[in-house]
Image (cartoon, rainbow, N blue to C red):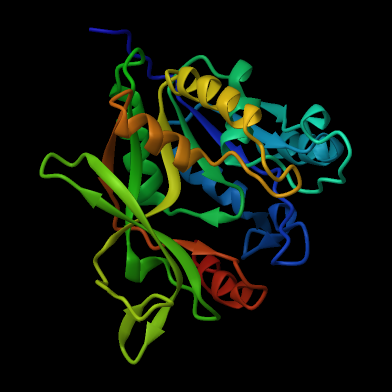
Length: 287
């Protein structure tokens, strides 16, 4: 049996450019408590038993995040910042504006992580039940095992009232292990049914991934290897990205890791579109 550790960490990816939303939504405040989405997630995480927090940020935003977190984190809890750098050596003669993807974001936090950890996006509100299920997994997960977790939401609980979304539908075996994720674009409610762009009907209860992950540090062996492959095969240095779900899927299909699916009753809230803010504000008035 490998080592277990109840000192669990929540990693928040906050280095994105918010290109569709129009402003730095990672720092926008919402709801009755006037907090960022990431801070609402942290409140749920503290209640669930997380003791440490790591934020992956762009270096130029570090001072702002440091001030916010210094004032927000209660005594007895710790936080650190990891910088997702532009890796200029990979884009010698181009003006790349966006980060190198979620897989690279997590690799940027590698040296801040020693124990089991959860991973969230700064602009997604995941819900108490979801974060609680993740914490329960991490507290008991064998820290030396390449068995990870992904929290599965009902499709119906992840849609936007203000436009289409892209969602990854998870196929799960009888033991609760992930088989694969099938991406569906332009998903919305149409005539009482949930359909994707090509008209495919998707069940309300289909399990989807909102990138709420639980990892042991074994993930870094996988990411280090795949990052080397990615950087050796960049075809478009302005747009190519190293995606975490793709990296996990590649490792899973080759037998290097397994992913347990944790079903949640939480409803996901996010701000894909600026008009989603009203729905989020309404929900957070009672949060």
